[in-house]
Image (cartoon, rainbow, N blue to C red; front, side, top):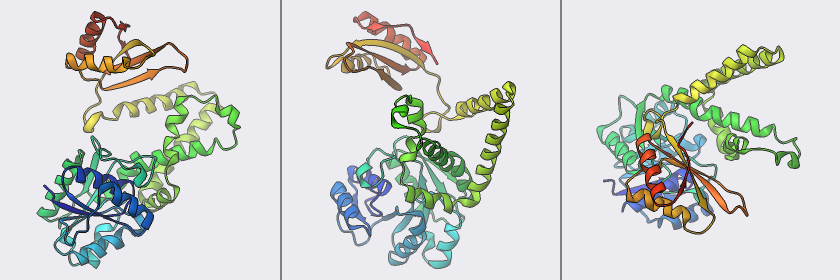
Length: 353
């Protein structure tokens, strides 16, 4: 197991890795040019000074990434240096040109994050069940690859290795474009009176959640990936322009086709750990609004060894009851339904969505 790491960058990602590795017994040092951010992260992970760490994690902004990687490679010839930047274009070429120690460099991109930036949002479980992309390179040393794979596993993520260009193309579609769309939609709300926004449902909140992200950070990311992102945006703009014309001309068939393609794309999104999305059944249970009722359900699940994949709670202040909808596999759903009925819970017919 990795014994010691230095994290350069006391933000959300760097501090989260520090917390996770510290919890596994690894020695962790966190440094940052921002004194306040560094002090908070150091206190969180109980940072300790390391002279020659086994692994050095670079978790800085995209525009500073290459410079910091090269500095750490040249100053630490016996350490593996790993960057976590979200854009990889030309990075390997720069490293090879400016460092004689490039064999000890490996590039990863954990596909995880939160709308809460900085060390204040850090969590040791941030990467659990998430994908982590590794950048394949002919000069990547066996040692660097092994340590990178070990880091991915220790953080609870699933690794996927690909070229730098393939990485930038895919993240433009699955990460950068969603950020743009969320920000674009949220920007349309500025001129709407607050009392009118009280009418908004959960769907609007879900779609605009990403718009809370750090604008300085994301502007760097988008501009750094402009080559891969530009054609993706052009395609989206063309689709929206076509939709605009179809709505204006009252073209029902093509408008429906646009929406159907969206559903087909959504259905392709995999389930946990990159596996094929599972089909769940949903079990509605009505419980009284009093302490311990939800815990009772969880205890009954444990007794019969069923696994809840997801849940939702519908309850308003002052309401005497709440509706808990549990998502389970088909087998577990029927098993739990029968069991909860037998012990007196108010269970309603299973639903499919």
